[in-house]
Image (cartoon, rainbow, N blue to C red; front, side, top):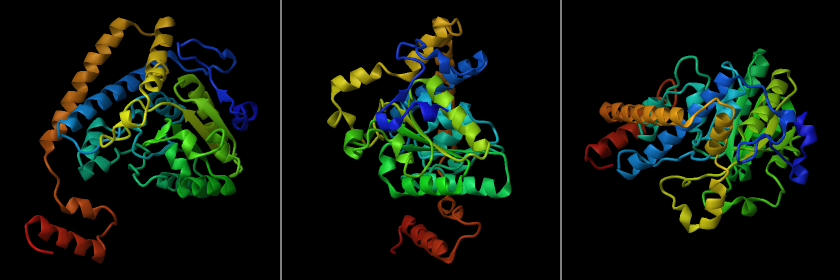
Length: 361
């Protein structure tokens, strides 16, 4: 197993492809059909364009606070691609590429970031939990879901994502410890994008890696180059197959880089050195994946140009449709917490309704 070969305590990072797109560890090159590789890259590119345009929409006052996933598209697509349709995803709020691959509609994603509760709806047959903003809570959701799958004897695995900052939260430890104790079918992904808002990883922990935090939970763990789609896919595929066999959870730290701000309320130039930023841009997963595809005659600059034009139009048309929907009714904010609104929710709704209508509390 890869988790036996690459020791996170020694800071050994698993890599298959370098930042130039060259295969440097062919022994562990996963077998991925060419059409799947092209779909993976196209999804990464679509997510990148959607994020770039979303930043502009927010700056124009057309969208609410937004958390871009710029730079993290490779690990997100590679991890979900290593699962099956029947498997589940429990995410936080920065998994745009994973959502697109899994089957969430771009329209719903835009609705969510525009503050419309309809955006939290998941299409029928798409095993994806709604966005979880409270940091770390998605790991407990994932472990609980894994326990449910185990209890019912179902053949499914739960993939969950968290950021590097989230590994300092109690929910992170609770989730992986419970999963380890009960041997649940979970695969936990740490997206180490180097900065938890403005706090660098070096200030988060004295641990050599974030992956090694799985040792205390008694579960296999590994650190991978998160901008290398092949290494990330291979490690996740192995973890998913292990979980499906009933052998329990795995913790994967995918080392990546957050190209943009933490959210649109953040200014990364305050806490990131420009020289470091420029250096990290050379590790961009889109750059290296594109280079690999072109080198192996699976992509071309002409196809790149056509895809960018196609996705530019798709994103713009989708956002225009979302803008035309208009505001949701106030009641929608309160009605979906429970099957029936509780007395407290009804009271809150009536109070806020009165406030919005200009009355006194």
